[in-house]
Image (cartoon, rainbow, N blue to C red; front, side, top):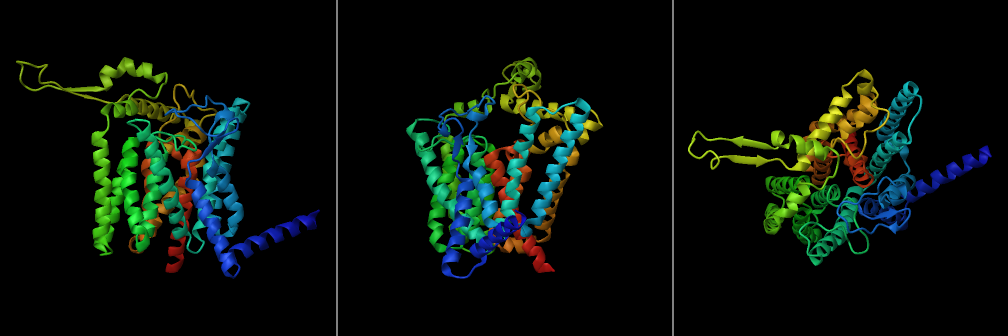
Length: 468
């Protein structure tokens, strides 16, 4: 049995090497198809349920009720593991493999040590552990992907294709339904978490595409049209992060092209078109939709507590010196309920973390009641609450290394449009998006974030090697 297993392993390695490193046009074409398919399926917002097949749901905030059979699972989950097997070359992904292994060991050790003190491990803790670990595996895939010749161009083309198909479909579905807020339907299937996470991921994919493919004349018109569609898309999503992400990304894109004198006029037109369509779409939209999105849509037990303290926390009254008509001179500012709830969630998690040394270093044995406190709305705080500071050190170390490498190599990164684009996208996802959400523990946005991070690391390590 031993020699057969060894033979199978050698045969597999030979097959992978032949596929990716063999000579000939056919082998090269196969490599391109596989890379294109991996990037396409990772960004595609196609979900399926164990009990119902392809996910079809028209509600804005689908809730599985904790039932695994009803939980929408993204197709990208399967593709990430298939991609790791197909790409092979794990020796070139040693950094991300080490971080993944150390983080997993830290989480398991924290869970085991807490179980020793409390006598058992609950099922919810193991599910939560899997929920964190699953997206992290895309780090390895991203580094495997990023070392392949021409991978960035292929990935950008795959992103462009999916966005050209998905964004117009969702906009048409929204307009056909007479809605003032983005519809989850893409006709053939529905997008899960289409207001919370997918708009930011789509904007990131678009920015990667436009930074990478703009130098190709044949893509400029298509990307300019797509830029306008993205403006309408994020305006209907009413996602503040997605809107800020798109505008800042496009401004940086046009500013760089003007500074380097690389078709700056065309880039400026695309940027202005995006911002103009976004602004017009927001202006024509029903303000009640925005109030609904930022208002009462998150049902929880905390809402009752908010109602009790709302008069103290939600209104700030500034009185003018005039005493003749004080009521007429009052200016009242109201904080949206959603933002108030997020602040209370974060406060609760922070207070629970610093209870004692065990909660700081090892976290808590079980998560809080989802009905009361669904998450900290901050990935890093949420991670530390559940698994402690010790487990997150490898991940924070990798984030620090990423920032250091970007700063150290910034002049060379700035010259390379595609490297600059993915660097900006990854840094925004890590230090802006996940400071206000827990996207990196969600299957679809988490896989995409870690995957792009892995690709960036491969590019940065290539720059580091050239310096040696």
